[in-house]
Image (cartoon, rainbow, N blue to C red; front, side, top):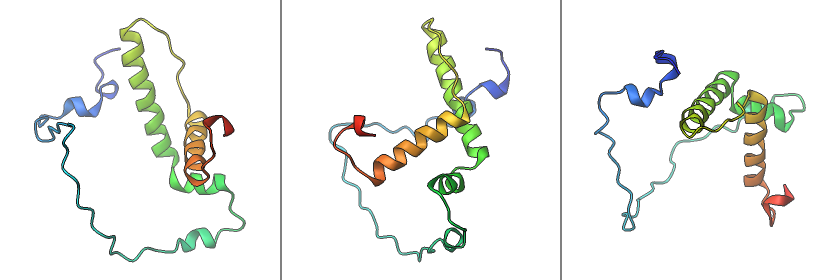
Length: 118
């Protein structure tokens, strides 16, 4: 890995690392969650689509730009961690990330007794 800024995680380039120093513990304070007061749209643009498939909806939620960003940082994380311990890895791609996200969305929408059922 070279010294190219594109290969460095953005988090390591910030100078104010101490600002978000969160310490997790056994005695975390309960959070007060406020009610959602904003009127939400009824997703008319989805209703206006002609016979949308779940894949069409997934593509609305995750643009190619966002998926490329996820792929890049997933591969960067793998490279940094696997090469450090001398192991090889297979880079992921947009198709695999879409499959992963789709399965996770499906698992949230329809709960089955076992992970093997998906």
